[in-house]
Length: 282
Image (cartoon, rainbow, N blue to C red; front, side, top):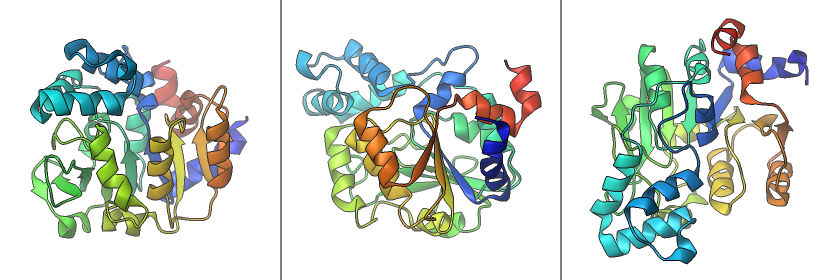
């Protein structure tokens, strides 16, 4: 696909009308290789290397996390997540290119690391909102944090030029994450009526398009979160960089949500956004 085909995406990003939606696959651009898990499969391997779980769920992240929570205590699960993500992840060239956009009202990051937050550190007025587990905080769905990590609130978020939304939480800064079966059950019972989605996110997505980067939609959780976060946004176009073979469920989801699939690597977007950066880091 030519650079011309990417022009509407690049223009939309620079005008602030396209929302970047990042999955863990963005960390594949790390140089040197990323020190933290970059897939659910890699994360569950880290967890089960430290805690014994039944063989039949050893490759199922949410089920393995639930077993650890039930039989080893939630504190153990917290400790294992912190250990898995204790290494600081330097922002990739793509993180930096997105953070350098002149207008960036909303960016969604659906993994547990802090690379996006670190990339945003040089922006003058930003903050983040993180999903929190009801196992940690019974009566709330999210916590707000200012750029320096201090606790904030929805009123403060309304004044930020850029809002980073971490729907699954984050190991650093907040420390609460959605990772076990029970974490997701709590959210999924309410997400269809949008209760767990922060009001500020709901306001910012209106009239905007979504650009999915480093994401897959192979399981119901991935599809449900993407569907509900982009709900009531623009009718399109939306795009997803998804090189390689897709599953039947992924193809159906893209059709259902009117997402145009781009069979391109993330480096194609990086080159279009910032040729000098992509050449320097190649």
